[in-house]
Image (cartoon, rainbow, N blue to C red; front, side):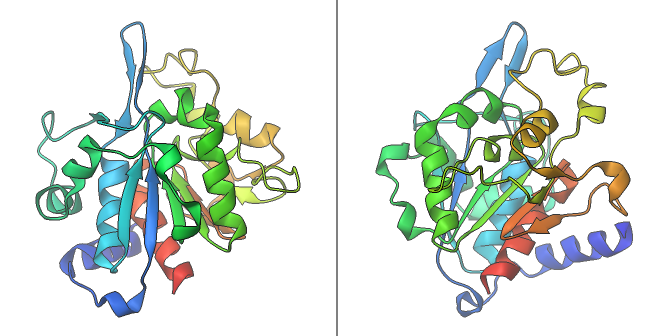
Length: 251
């Protein structure tokens, strides 16, 4: 499984230009404006947004960034802290990623009917602001109910737990989804076992009726879970694979 995934990602990177005729339309990526809890800084994870962005653009899709307050957003594991290789480097240098991140849109400027998919990446920031933003939750619901695809990885799926559909049901109710699991959060020194977070991903999804898929239920903990146009994964290495599966569903 790990070898297959490595070859898949290598293929994605090796083919930066794909005919736009393969799939067209727009994807909305939702990012956090960040939050602080003492010394702990909740941000977006660069890798869990940059790699999916590259996959979407590579397949001819247009990508917009939105955040609760609009304007610039910050990242953990940013290019200033690391030397990002592969897809991360490519999308920053050639695909306008940084420019979009410096000027994210506000929710009220988004016409949900114009998007084929919505993606929420990892990083703990989304638990503090995105998950509680009713405007963004309404956008996700609208895209989904118009037949669109919803995806997320890491801590991102936590926000999906607050999305309500027009009939009052939660988006994730009765669906197989996954995200950053309690078993891993409990060992996190960054979040002090999750005590610095407003809630934990697995707890929120289960509380909303999701059929949460644990590590023990997957052949590989990095596998992507797909159910009813919802695409989710637990950890950072799966971010690009989530985006690729979303593209596959859009074809």
